[in-house]
Length: 212
Image (cartoon, rainbow, N blue to C red; front, side):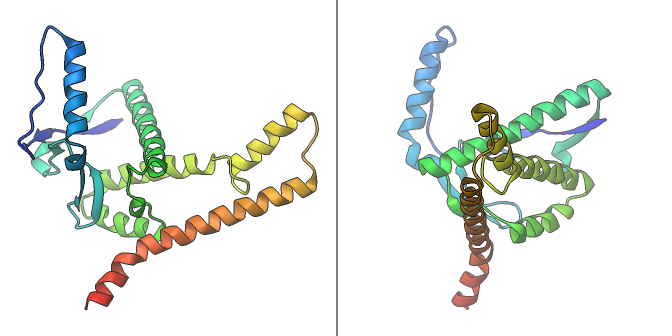
């Protein structure tokens, strides 16, 4: 198998400094934490990615270059490829949960949640970079959608697993009325999520249309 690794380049985005003491790791952690807390307003920044899409993310002054000269493909043995794939899958799951938690905590931007329209748009943009980026995007979408499908929401597979778990605990199935109510709630949640993502997907178009 093969994996793509990207070299990272750093640049100084703001004149902020975190002092470190080589002999005192605990002090270093406190120093960096204080530095981050002091720059919280600076960390939350909106910008645009390489395709011009609006982004909202924390910025630490470290970025990676997507230049072809800074990207290299390394061939590894199958066992290493499986291990690297597992690590990347877990990384996607971890980032997904962190993003969802940030939405509820108010530290993430809700307009970054997209649906079918945004997926199609990003897929077209990534396709211009070559086959490997498209393959990586497909893998990320597969993991994210699979994870979403396992959420304990009636109507999704995770909702069915929830009902099976309750049945195992009670020793009998839930009453049909309770299951019906659960599926209605799940359907309402899914529909609201679809409407929300559609609004996020199309809002830039409406904004440009109204501005013109």
